[in-house]
Length: 336
Image (tube, rainbow, N blue to C red; front, side, top):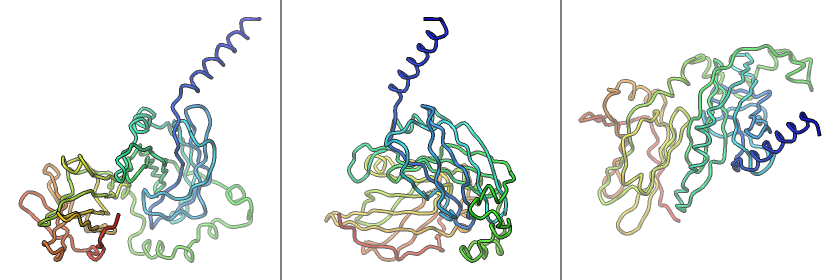
């Protein structure tokens, strides 16, 4: 047996050993986009630690809330190695542009999150992160999150570059379509065009979402305690507080909130849910940006003991501001 063959066999042995010892998890790739800025992934690939890969699905036009999961396809093994690299090409419809990029992912951070997992607030049992979410926004902004059980954490933010793609390559089934025809989705997503006429393309918006402030959620309702609260931030992150994290509710650096779901209970064991469905963006951003960033902030749900006179308050020190542009009617008794 010659020396080269011995080296090859040794390399294969170590490679197989490493793959056997490599931690794998049950997760699914998916895409995301800002609500008013639709996009479509042409080619999206996550390269995994074991050398395999999975594609990022994109069924037609993606027009989700920033950070929310989109298309999912069953592919590959149930258990997958962690992703180590992202390769992406996509169409940004409102800009009429294509973007492309390739980036190494923060593997240590991803491994730490997968290893730690999440706790299911309903059962108290440890659970796993279940989605890798890849978001694409105007200006070539790419953000990657990891999601599991009402918890979502940003993995990283990346910058793509403009590229050129022929219609024959992008739409092989209709190679004669013109770029103007391809990018015209005014009839399928009219709200995006209305927003475009009012605000244009708000470059830099998705980076401003990532700015963080020291804040926490609270309730002030006589006779009631807070059992748990789920909240989403404009930057796509999501957090759930319950059990010890409610008891030890701390100020923490978080992005500006856009959604809350409070679960309340009284001494009789009655439970109620109050949901703030997507606060008005301009109002929330203005409240936080006009605040003193060096001082903590509380977002407080207030009601009287009869669960009337509902208010959501922005509080910093002795200053309290009523959050006005929200729907206060999403309130119901919780039945387990």
